Image 1 (cartoon, rainbow, N blue to C red):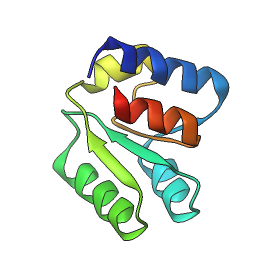
Image 2: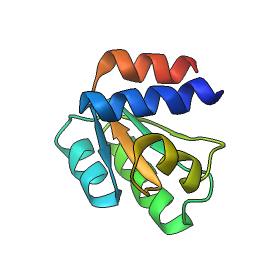
Image 3: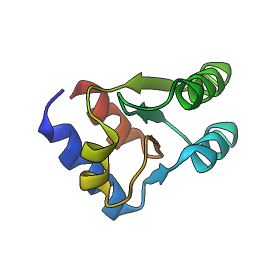
Image 4: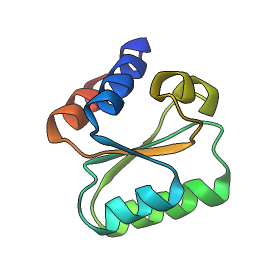
Length: 97
């Protein structure tokens, strides 16, 4: 993964195709809106476990990326450890990066 991923996350945010934070991400997964879930490398184990379990139960891909919460917050403009991408195109591109 490269800094292109961080740029893509910023673009997703500006396009309104991203959900930030634990509870909104869980809701987007349960409502079948999330296409891809991204978790920061320094996310708490409890948070990561809950998101990964929910994503697995709903057949949504989830990845822990080698970026910290600080790195993600610079890209998306809000301090968060988990986010979900709501658009198929953005999700596919993020997976390739």
